[in-house]
Length: 121
Image 1 (cartoon, one colour):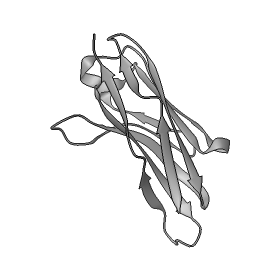
Image 2 (image 1 turned 30 degrees about the horizontal axis):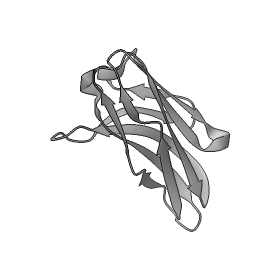
Image 3 (image 1 turned 90 degrees about the vertical axis):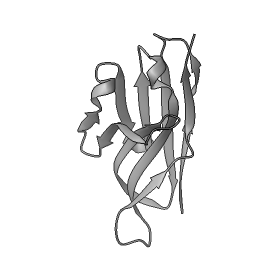
Image 4 (image 1 turned 30 degrees about the vertical axis):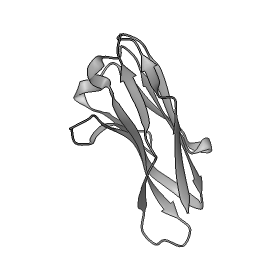
């Protein structure tokens, strides 16, 4: 059994910053990739940023230059530093991790519960 716990969401004014964090816990052997998705009302969930275990990262075009993803592998934690926030960044942000778990032969994907980010004046 594994769990992803997110924190750091909230209300921020346009141009402001927030940092999201997500920590994985449980019977984890290794984590292949960790990432952040978001889902705005009436829209599909979309990938925002991802970080592989080897260090490579991906950022969606809509957040390039504003958001930075990073990992602390020792803590099984992924962060999303969000700067220059815009109203269109308003969404529920979900953490996702692809992990090798004790007793499961293939890597499994897991989701956090989601954290609300609202950008508004």
